[in-house]
Length: 351
Image 1: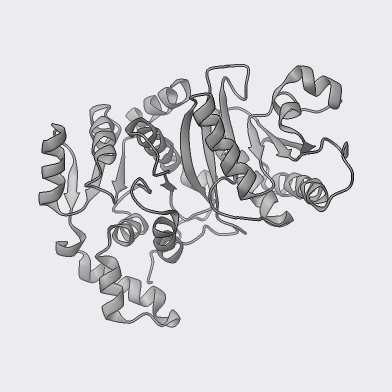
Image 2: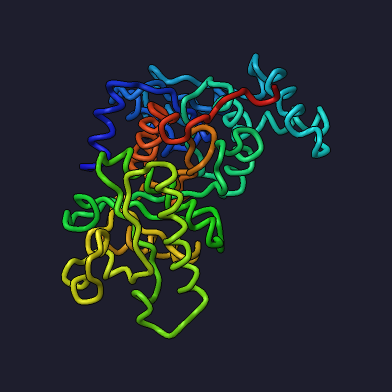
């Protein structure tokens, strides 16, 4: 809780409104109660008021300080529906279909976020990834000059020698199945920016592979990570981002100083990485989840990178503690989102 504890202190100084589209889900109710009790801001639950209240009563959870909105009866339903129609009419969406979509909590929550009625969104505890991402991609869309919307997971382990005082940022673990060189560079730079923003220190980014600096026979995936490392350095330099990038390297060389000293020389990253970039979604998702299960690490993800507004798609296996941690990350992002993505949110959807 070291990492999340620091974020909670920041949010207490800058409270935020976070919308949770899965308002009837017990873990969401527990996280929302903690969110308000810790003075982090106003949690907004979406769903049928009667069902939300019944679920809260069964759990003996107070709803004091928690807003509940039913999209189907909301006073904003017609306005939100017409805006979605204007956004998607060129894709063939009909007005009736826009209204039907806006009655779904994930679509309604995405529009609330885009319309500044919420500062961040957290969903996914009871929905598959596609149900969370589709409304965000259609309504919130990507920030300016972002080549690829991706995601990262924050892992907090007990061993403070790992990462930054036990905290690691890992990407992409949830969105792009097989990123190309440019996408990997975008993922690396976006994750480095977030790590710098959250940790307050220089990001040290390891571009991971099964090889360290050509130690294995030539393979296309090795060449891809080498090229992505060079591209990430160029992008970071252009954007004046405080970060070091190195790769390709194996994960032990990235995290363990003793191993790094044998495999690499004169690296600012090896043995001290606080950001890990994986070559594909398979390796990233498997590694992050295995680490959380085997080491009982705190797992906070997926934090979406490159959207016009801050949002997260949590795992269906998340606990209330995990969801609260993700909401804290999203809230701190919202405080200085323009610094992370200059020019983000320049106009409202449908205008």
